[in-house]
Image (cartoon, rainbow, N blue to C red; front, side, top):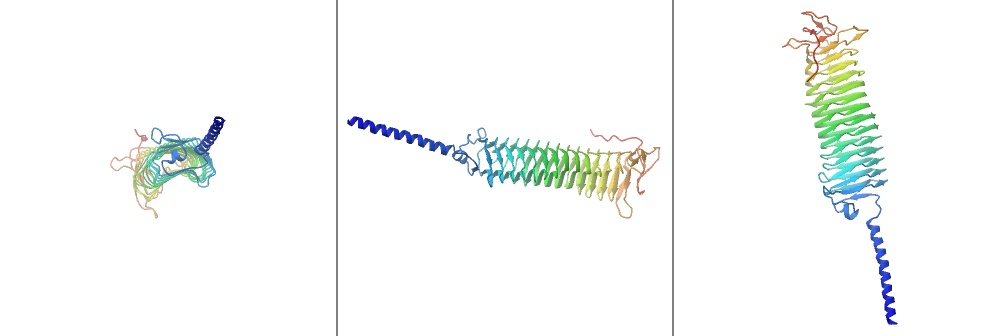
Length: 439
């Protein structure tokens, strides 16, 4: 009898142990794998001990934050602060919050944000004091600002798509060594890229379509290159101001109000840009110094192909001005050399200048200011030394004695060409067209 009682006690203890074991495991598993509706990481250990993300936090085996759908949090969906471990955020949907992702004070080259969707956020990605983050192949839709960075270095923002943005698409402030590469921006009501107080920025291969504001704005920048971007059917294309060593190269701008604005730049280069079908101007430049404008094409702009005011030490060469209202207009500028340009079929003057100090030679003027295939005025107008405009202009090279080619001029030895307003003369007009192409 006593043996049976012992067996019953053992059996009871065993059953209770099993129940406790199973229940405890369930509680443990429930805690370990609890649902996530917000992610907040304040130290390296949080990746594993707080959220149990896979990975080890090394460069070869980063922590992976993958496949989450986070929505409706008041301040942020993901917040990561002061960590040193490598991590990737991928394949997540982040929406309907003030911030999709906030990054703050991260170690160098540890963060990657890849293939996520951001919708209806005030700021989709916000980063402060971070270095060398990689943001690639994400989709941004209906955000107020898609990416905002402050005091960040080494960011690469590549291959993302931005649609229906309200304010800025990308807003960089006081950042260095940033690359914006091959992004697609369409149907936005605010500014595309806004970059201020930054240096060593490369903006390359981006496509802008149907934007209501300016696509690229840079202020107070140094050593910045804007190259091979495509801008179509937008209000304004590129605006660069207050900078040193700024290059705008090989961009294609079509159907816009204003093309490229290049203002208060020292050691600047405008080269091989194509600006067409602008409601106002193709290129407008104010107060440039020690800069070069060459090999650009300005075509079918309703007002002026290229307008330049102020500044000095400019070289304007090998540009083509076709079918604009006025090809090139220059006011109040100093020490200009204008050579090997072609002005063709502009509705009014090929070149219109006033209050400048310029030397103008070896340019081709072909049927500008024509009506019914007949020249109605000279092809260029020079207002210098009338009552209001003072300066000095020379319409030939005083050393080589080469002037410019004028298509309507019946050339013979000793012939001269009178520039409109009558104060300036090309004493050495050329018999044949000049080769305006570069090597």
